Figure 1: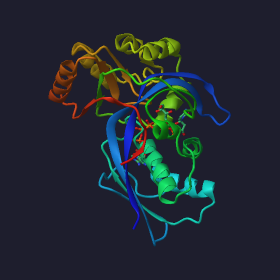
Figure 2: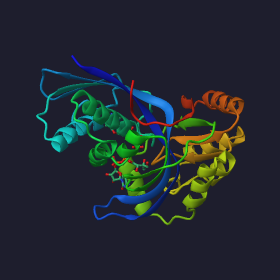
Figure 3: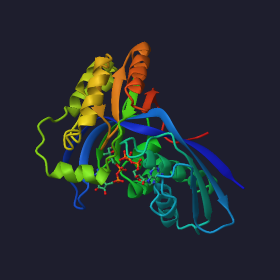
Length: 291
Ligand SMILES: C[C@](O)(CO)[C@H](O)COP(=O)(O)OP(=O)(O)OC[C@H]1O[C@@H](n2ccc(N)nc2=O)[C@H](O)[C@@H]1O
Ligand SMILES: Nc1ncnc2c1ncn2[C@@H]1O[C@H](COP(=O)(O)OP(=O)(O)OP(=O)(O)O)[C@@H](O)[C@H]1O
């Protein structure tokens, strides 16, 4: 049986602004996204059976048509017009769930890349992103990866130069936020603090990590007024983080360090304070890749 193993990196948002709404209610965004070396491993194989079989040890991950991986398979066969074949997908989860780290989108991206390879359909990255967009707003970025200025609902990608050496401490408090709920709450709120996306873009292009970190801001952060997120940010800043911001629709928080020792100390302090889902990460320059 043909099988392929794909590493699917998580996404962090260094800043997010909401600039409008689309005809279908989706929000139009301007954001800076970065892939990191916190990754799910997705193994895809084809077989003589019907439908999509999903295996994952994590009980919180649905194994049926609600899984992003299932939707990706359906979208792939619909787009290519190929007769659907049996697809088995094993997901080894490292990316925390409902964290704003695009875990489900990364898995879907991996499956699209895998099917294109296994079935030799020869689709370009742009075509795969077009299919991915229908599965989830973060899927195109998860396919392409690296550092990018991202617009639209997440489908307009402009690559930026890779970041210079730096470290991210990523931590998810004991709080799960559903993306749709977060955007719904945003619609009902008056926002006081807006990010300066042009400023952070310039800092990223110049490779100025300190300037980048101090410019980070996510408009979705204040809508929930989550005390857990404020406490986590305060702890990170006390441990000499250069900046800290909520990723995506939350609830993970990302902090930036130039010094590895400081980053490691921050991880130790967070773990000691009871934040079990804490990771020391580095930026990576790629999206879903075939291993
Ligand atoms: C907030 C981000 O994490 C930033 O990277 C992403 O835009 C979220 O992307 P995602 O999880 O792939 O989102 P989807 O699964 O496509 O959408 C979940 C729900 O979030 C809302 N949604 C999502 C993305 C977007 N640009 N506008 C929205 O309003 C919609 O109600 C949608 O039904
Ligand atoms: N492959 C998958 N991995 C994890 N969760 C999945 C997957 N497919 C569907 N789900 C469902 O989607 C929900 C949210 O998943 P996910 O972890 O991708 O959210 P997220 O971190 O908020 O992502 P994003 O940053 O894209 O908003 C979960 O509660 C889970 O039930």
